[in-house]
Image (cartoon, rainbow, N blue to C red; front, side):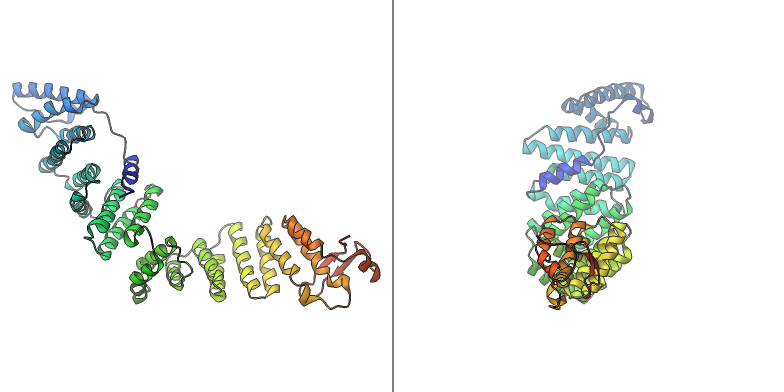
Length: 437
């Protein structure tokens, strides 16, 4: 239960600030018809609202309680005030027996509000949150909390307030891990319903979405995720129905969080996820992993899709750069260079592409030399040097310069410093002659 306090505080941060209660609310109240009783009610109302606004919850409880016994149908405001009073009293006591009695009273206040004024869905949601808030560290009440949140979700047709999402998921997690009273399918069913709430709410705090996903993954696979365990529990389920987007997303995210991206199952799931929700980022990530595992055909396919969904010049440049890397790994230097040049064309500031071309040139000496003309043979280093300079890599440029022809070489072959020659070979690039000395 290490994260209990963290998520509780986060949930409190996203709640609206408590409102101050004023006498103006009297306009919406239903007062007793009997003059004497009405006078008493006005007096009690003034007493408890003054104490409530001053934060004197204990002193507010007495005159508030008068209404429950004598005029419980004053209005919904009475029960809103009552919840504030008893929440305040609960926050201000540390005695377990007193806390339990106060909590029971708070739950009764919510039940009376529903009895007299209906609005069961909204009130149940608030009741669930307040019960959670005061009992989350009590393992004996985890099932009760789950029961209340489930009821709130069902009564609200799945459209619960966003501030309930994190507490609800934490209750699910603790029930699964401590009580072991939820199956994997039951956890997934609840999360899928909450996902629809988050997707439908354009104003939902992004922190809620991120924290919700983290809690869900921890609930499903535990905080210490093991790749073999993830595969054992979800591999067959995914492969039995590979078109199931929700299962594919679960496997993809679990394995990503568990650092299992080198496993073929992760790429399989990622492909399904990308087909259902295609985009530059996911195809780029899939391509990078495929390339790192030597799956060149897959890497090329993923990067081509990344290029298809690239939107900015930087994304277009990066996608071409990555395609160049695939071809470079395959030893297809001319094609790789063409992709790197496309990357530079899209984003002239992509220094990685200049340096990548430079490395292809630098490593082409053995395959390009003819052993007929030393200056021409070493022209590949001249071409590499120029690219390294454009790429801002002085260290590689210095390494290339060490391989330049010498002044003697230039003299022996009846050439001059500054004269342009063609590298020939696959590069076919014009460079100016320079020497290493």
